[in-house]
Amino acid sequence: ARKPEILNALANKVSRERIGVELMGMLDSKAPLRALSLISDFDLTKVVFRVPLDAIPSPESDRDSGITLYKETGFEEEAVWGNHGLQYAANLEMQIAELDSAVSRISHLSNQTIYLSAMLQPLHGKNIINLKGRAEPAIVVLVRDSLKLRLSLANDILNTSIGCEVFSQMMKTQRYDTPDPELRLSLGKLIRNIKGLWPLSLKLAVATQSCNVSDSKGCEKITQLINNWGLNEFYKLKPMVDGKAIMKIKGIKGGPKLGVLMEQLWDWRILHPSGTIEDCIDYLKTLPVPEIPVDNSKKKKKRQNTNSVSTARIDN
Image (tube, rainbow, N blue to C red):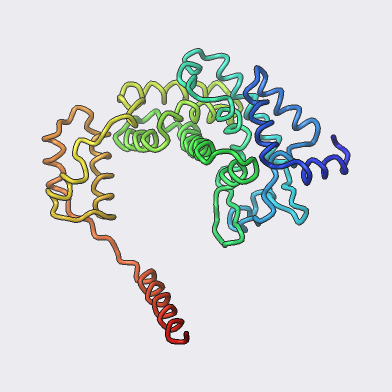
């Protein structure tokens, strides 16, 4: 499989859909880590996790990173991030095996989500620009376009990666030793965004830090804070005051202003877990209506498009 002609045949004659299906089957086996190891041993990472041919790298995201995602041949350079990802997967598997509580918290997640999250974590923060000039997270592009897997899986892996970076930063700075309202708010907002993926993100954060003792203790302290603050299932809660009630109380219509106010109410709820609906409404009344700057560029572009259509009709 290491021969160039075989690699080229696998890359160009086997459909991306088939590669994605085979990878999912391997990860769903009893030895998913062994599957990833074999892919690396046979130099197949560059084939399996191949960047789509209609994508080019984002200079801003790859500058001085030591990671090249795309070459003229269409193969990404896997030597750096592939090896790191495999090590993260091995560390994560060890973390899960050692802590029964971790297994119960991520038992609802598939092996595909768990091991692909570890494998692709080194690509966090890296973007790929497609031919339309749009920058997209490399993780999403690889899962959705290269492996042809469902978008929901790509988003789960991306959210796990985002959570992992936040938890990693908390461990590095030992932020958990000062449990103040700011930390509580940060954890609550994160868990509300990544939902039930937060335990996996937390374990992956330890895995990326070589599983040392201090990080394991940090993981336990962060978990304890989340549980004590009642944030472990915060994402399941429904708003105390819905959008219609907010618009009526504040005298506004839907749109960005409503979104800002709803976020402020969620922040208040994170900091006031015992607050009632009446308390929430009282707080809402004290909030000023947010001022949203008008984006005149969109109106100008829309006006230009309208003028172009009118001119075309006159010419016809």
